[in-house]
Length: 129
Image 1 (cartoon, rainbow, N blue to C red):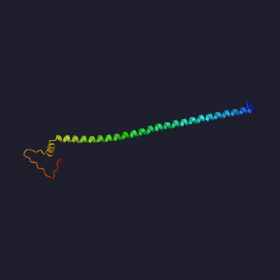
Image 2 (cartoon, rainbow, N blue to C red; image 1 turned 45 degrees about the vertical axis):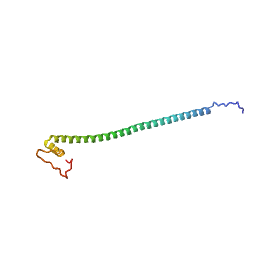
Image 3 (spheres, one colour; image 1 turned 90 degrees about the vertical axis):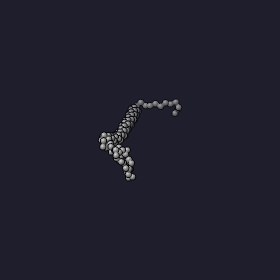
């Protein structure tokens, strides 16, 4: 065998059938690779979409929870302010009553009527209403 010899392929029916079978196998393998690649891409896209929407749902749930807490706190503050407002309105009504006003002035400032004497007893504490 000399170094310059070339290999020749025979052009017979066996060789052609073998070539055709090889091309079909190559085509089938290529199709399988393409399908596998598409399947992997579809699965990745599906998981990305599910992850994105899952994050959105969890984030929305947390925001809703925080807003509900803020609403509860604000509602409690509003109730407190309404109670305080009602109390202040009641005090204003009482202060418009002369008898009550006289009583408060007498207790707090030791104010007396003409000819009246006020005695401070030891068991009375200052500031008691």
